[in-house]
Amino acid sequence: MVTAPSTEATTKYGFVFLDCNLTVPAAGTTDFNGTVISNFHFGRAWQNTPKSAFIRCETPAMLNPTGWTTPINGTLPVTFVEYGNTGAGATADRLLQRANGGVVLTATEAASFTISNIFKKDTDPSFVFDWMPEASVNIDLGTLATTDVNKKRMKVYPNPFTDRLTLSYQLKSDSDVTISLYDNSGRIVKYLSEKAKSGDNKIVVDGSTLKPGIYYYSVKSSSEQLSGKLIKK
Image (cartoon, rainbow, N blue to C red; front, side, top):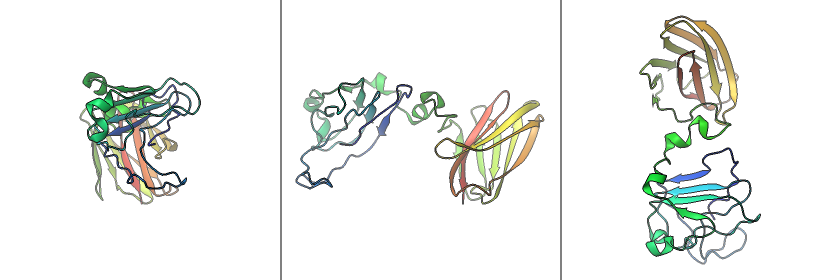
């Protein structure tokens, strides 16, 4: 079994597998529980409103034709979907045998399963900004340059950083500005605010207390928001 989702009702997407190659040990292999593997399922419902999607995945013959197995906590409102899967586990005759809430989407229905849609802030109440912004992000050892949807330039440097980093940005007009840094779980780890003038602005952030890892920044004014990725060495 690949997934056992327990998705909150307020979450639009649950587990989503895009363009994956599903592999499984050879038939007859014993798993960690001592059970001999003969087949597997995409998943089964656990609790809340389970959601899982497999989009354009390569599936092996050992995928059980039903796709999804029976829930462990009674009948639940599931969203178990797939589209465009290939391989011996997704032949036409097997798709007809999908059960336990499994649905094969149409091309129109599957079109919403894109990375940018899945990680938009309005897909989950815990997301405070778009995790995968539409901006074009280039990471190198010196400077991260981000072009947002309004074609404004912003620089964050150095990136990766060790102790301090500088955020340089442009504004169309005077505005109150907030600068937020988030860790990989979406928790705010730094928050600053300032009154900024139209034109070029710059602020230095002390990141010496942050642990090494990946962070995200958000610079928000009264009229626009810029965001991107940071790396702390």
